[in-house]
Each structure stands twice: as structure tokens, then as C-alpha cells.
Image (cartoon, rainbow, N blue to C red):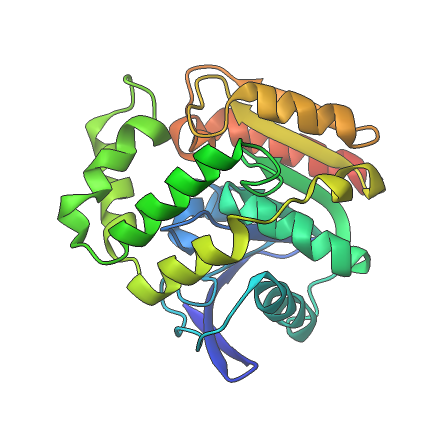
Length: 264
């Protein structure tokens, strides 16, 4: 892991390969290891950069209050510090919402956008009751031991056909969560509605969805596709919410072909 200091926060990240920068933003309860099937494979064509968001993985915990604007500011300064722009910026789940929030403030950092199994904020995708239930559940979990709740996430992340090895990897990554970071992440984005950003996106945009995603169903991706000018949606069969991990070859092919075509 490499490290840099952003706004007094120690940010850990991986950087592999050369070429146009491809910045990878992980999901909630995750870190840069969420992208383990992509980092080496895609580094053949790109400078792949995967950060640990503040309060995740090897990065330090931010001091409260730390809201969505603080995450966006930290990410923008991270990309600028690494001189990694304009970049292909890919966000998985929570990372996709962060990418949209970043685009609202810093469209100049984007060469293209890839949104995977995500949503334009929970408030921008689900009824208020669902948002409230998800937020309350996450806040409760932040006070629990990982073995008491992390295995319960698996049915919403992978299909029934996912191999045990993948399930163990996901549990291992999620079990190393930071309680403070987890709380801040959900509080910052649960009530965020980013639907107004979608029609303003002017860079090439690819949406990738697992056909069996239960946390963010394909219809969310279809709605986002229809709202983003010129966006394309790729639905990956036999994949759930973590489509990049469950079907990495299909995911990587979609990303590589899209990014290479968008730089011409």
C-alpha cells in the first residue's frame, strides 16, 4: 500500500500500471481490496489507482462531523495530488454515489465514468421507509462485532452460486471495517439525492449491473441509464451486487473495452 496525506488524513491506496488513470472507488464496509480482481488485470492498459476512503482499510478515521462534501473534497484532492486526471473514474455501490457527488463539484477530473451496481444516493433511489431502515440497520451494525452481522450481508451481495472462496474473501474484507468510518459513510450518503446530477453528465458513461443484484436492482440501473445522456448499460448474468468480484472476466472486459474506446 502507498500513502499520502490529504487534509491531515492518512490515505492508503494501491497504484499499479501505466497509461491513462483509472480510479476505483470501493463500496461500503469495503476498501481497495474490493477491486482485487481488477487491479492487476486492468493495469496492463491503465494506471489503476484504488484508494481506501477515509475511515476505511489502511486510511485514518476522519473526525466528526464529516459529510458528503468532505468525502468529495478528500477524493478531489487525492486525485489532484496524484496528478491522476482527467481519469476514468469507476465507483462500485457506495463508490458510485461518491463518483456522482464528485462529478457535481469537479467534472474536470473525469475522462469517463463507470457506475457499477450503485444508486444516486439512497434517497435518490428508494422510498423514505427503506432509507430509514437501511440507515438504522447500518448504525446498529457499526456497534456490533463483525461476526454478528457481516455474514448476514452475503445474500444481498452475491448469488446463491457464488463459490465459498469468494464468500470468505468478502467476509474477510468487510470484517476489518472501521466502526467510526462505517457510521460516517452511511450518514453522509443515506439522505443524499443525486438524481439531478445524472442529466448533467457529459463524459462517456458506462453502467455495469449484476443481473441478480438484490441491493440495487437492475431497474435502478435502467433508470440511471435513461437519465444520463448517451449512457450504456451492461447487465452481467449470474452476478449479484458485487458483479466485479463474482464475474470478473466479464466485468473487466466491459471496463477495458469502454475505456479504450472512450480515449480515441
